Structure formats: structure tokens, C-alpha cells
Image (tube, rainbow, N blue to C red; front, side, top):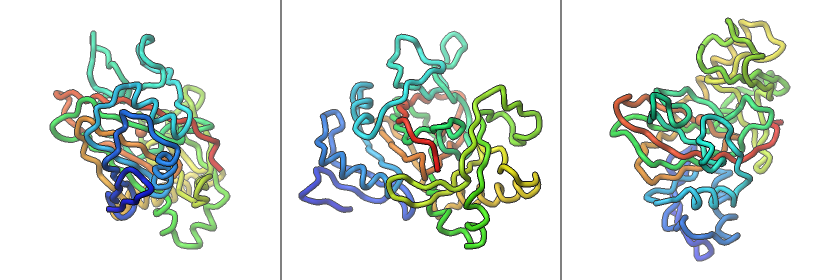
Length: 280
Ligand SMILES: [Fe+2]
């Protein structure tokens, strides 16, 4: 654990590759610029900040989020009376319809909104109701995955781009997927973090359909290798949620996934996304 007279919190790494837990900071109160700068320094290097045991209102969550960027306004499946910056992630149903997005089951590794031209820089997720088992969020450091690539593969990948799509319904993206039917975006296979200047692998198993300008077999085999590297347990952290947790991760070099959980139990989280730049 590290602490300093200069910062009003303590911090401890959650795993060798990704994640830091922050202690002794009251997120229900406004933060000073110095505190925000200290948090951001840790965040851009460890990829994920975890704060436990909070009782955050929507106002607290959006105020904290806005210290780090501009909250996006969600446009899907939210109640028109609800704060447009909040997206509910939930399996709770009212009148047979989910009250939030991504209601059920596991989700493969991904970087949020990679199918947009300017994907979210960051995601802040706050837990309101959590099932007794499952629904964990796995995080992986895609810069660490990049660093471990053999030099010839880094060279091969450095100018390649890939198609990222919104359709999560099929594992075989190319077969039967109509790109005009949903958002998709072409991004570099390797992106550079605009703050740390470090490179990360920026393809993911949930959304990436193919590497552009390669034969299908080559694209499939390279993607399969890159997905496996990102999912290496040596560069991961598993977050087992409790109510009152706030997590903020950097989508520019961290990927995440969700494990399955019982359909009979309620799960409710509040998400705020921060606007990002076009990857390069
Ligand atoms: Fe996500």
C-alpha cells in the first residue's frame, strides 16, 4: 500500500498487471484538483480504479466521472425521466422488459463501444444490487499483452486495421452479418494511448469481425492468437462485486468481460461513460 502526505488516500495494486484499489477517499464529497490529478496518474498506469463501500447517489457518480472527462449521454433503453448520462446495466424486468442494457449472462472480453468512431475513453460502473454468485467482471491489460508480442508480429500488425461491430449475437461475424444493420468502426489493431504513449492491442473477441485487407484464414488465425493473449490469466484481475463498489477503467488499454450469473437473482449497476477520441 502506498500513501503520501500529498494525497488524501491510500492505494494498493489489485494484481501485477491491472487494477488499483483506493482507500480512505469519500466520493460523496467534491475532490480537489490535486487529488484528481493523483488519481488520474494511477489510473492511466494501472487501467482500473476500485473504490469499495460507497453510498453514491447518481449525482455523486456523475460529479466524480466529470473530473476525468465528459460523460456521454446514452440513447438506448433508458427511461426518459432518468439522467441521460446514466445507463442501467441490469437483468431486472418490468412488464416483461429489461429496465437496462446487457441484461443476461456472460460477456466476452471487449473494450466498450469499440464499434464507434470515437469509442468511450472510460467507463464508471457502480453496483446497486449484486447476485449472490457470478456476474464477476474480468479485466485484462492489453498493453501488457502487446508488450509480450514477438517482435516480428508487432511489425506485421503495426499498420493493420480491423472492423469492430455491434452485433454480439454470433461468434462467426462474417457469416450473415449485415454491416449496414448496426454500428461498426474500423480502428487500428494496435492503438497508442494518448497520455502514456504506450501501445495496446485493440481488437477484442466480442466485437472484432476481421482484420482489413488480409485473407480470411490469416485474419482469423491472427485474431484468435491476439484474443488468447489478451485473455491470458497472468495479465488479468477478477472483480467480485459487492454493493457500493465504484469501478473506473480505461478502455484505451484495458479490456473486460463478465461471467455468467443466475437468472433468478437481481443484478443492477449504473454506468457512466466518458467520451473518447478516435483511436490511432
Ligand atoms: Fe462492457
